[in-house]
Length: 269
Image 1: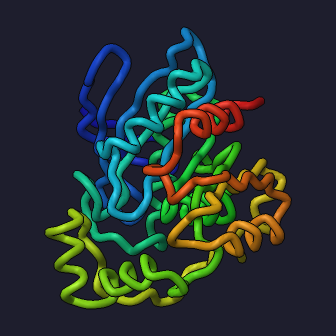
Image 2: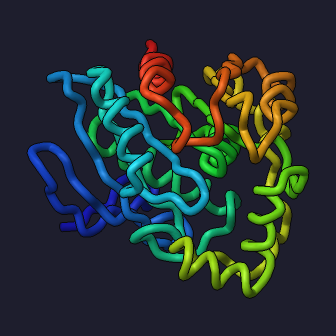
Image 3: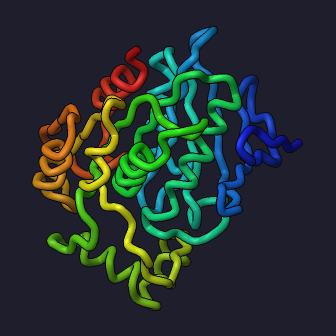
């Protein structure tokens, strides 16, 4: 089964998982195939969908992503779309570590609207957090825009190497041996070419998001990005800022209580 929506948006290979749930392969504007999963709301009728953007080395089927999706669906006010960024999971292409992933998110948002949802909120974790911020700044017209945006554990600026986990990540991304570790050890296929041009940074993107509601969430024990990152993002925007006591990094560290609050914020009218 395949279809084509407005603006050249392609949707292919849609299969039913359970009643109302479905898995699809979407095509981005640069013709990369992206796997996506749709789960309807527990409520009988809802006009809102939440699109979840995972962190680097994640995928739509990783346990932490599935846990977040269940938590948002169980709030009863929204359907949920999860997907795997390029180079991750069953998607095609190679990861550009936050650059062209904006196109992947846009395809997922457009799919949610194709499925009948008038309001679409995006929530991203770590790399996915940087993507939802840039997407909200850059994709403001047509069916790909977001109505509410939340970034969890996101970096404020590129090329940060101030922590040991980020130095290891840079080795994985920039070195041939590191990319082999990424491919076979982390199941993530990484583009070997450097950014050219360097994409808009998250802290440069956030002033462009208003008047779309924006939430920045960050743990005070994040081993990747210290607290100056969320404070920079909040200081450069009109964002609401949640600093979570005792929280580590991204979707793996997001507990049930935080996910419930996030679900409530994302589906707020």
